[in-house]
Image (tube, rainbow, N blue to C red):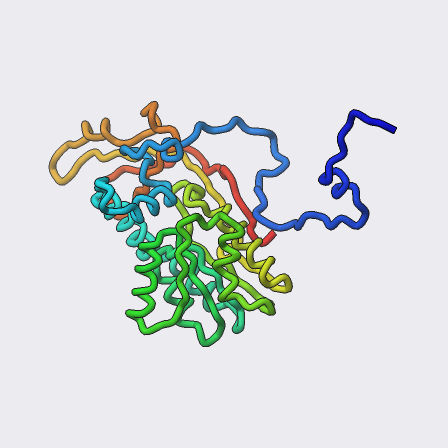
Length: 301
């Protein structure tokens, strides 16, 4: 019997008996099932504006600028030194963060394979390298230059840790699988995916897609492996805050508050500025409301 409806091979495969269900793993949005919310505007740093504001917060863009051919005639050294200097220093000086990774790495069972996504604040990666006698590991880094820096740091500390540059992106499952395959044995039974890929807005460094790609790649190489993420869950919260400076020594400097970055600036859509509040004794800080959870992810789901 003739039919105007064309049956494709995909239709046949979809209705074939015994077709395996798609794998149920990956990050889970903790806001699933809640009332739909209005989509926020696209951040400036994702649109491509790199002048001021949040233009230097997208880690992917920063790494591409860092790896850019110096002969291209585009000079970004000053901005890059500021951005990466802040990333490394703030990460190293974050006591709570370093304590979390130090204790988490110490609790990893012997024999577990550790996949490190990104150089991060350097110290956790070196701590993983130090425990090589208890289990193997590999570091995947988006930037070729940072990957070279990581290898130099490992060598300077007389440690051993394979480092693989992934300039095509850490969110490409096939490329991540190819990078892991020479290092991750197929019979591995326990894998830990460790990352510090946190931006000021939590997500613009590619934390979620990179974690998902690593998870899928590990499952493809070592299907019997039990996979754990460090951290296991992440949440982004927001709190309205008033920050102002009144006096510096004997001088009244309140007029300078007009130049502070604030949400009253109509160009401030999703601009993220990292501000330390524990080292500014002359700054007045007041919470204007309770914290609200914007989004969260459970990677061990």
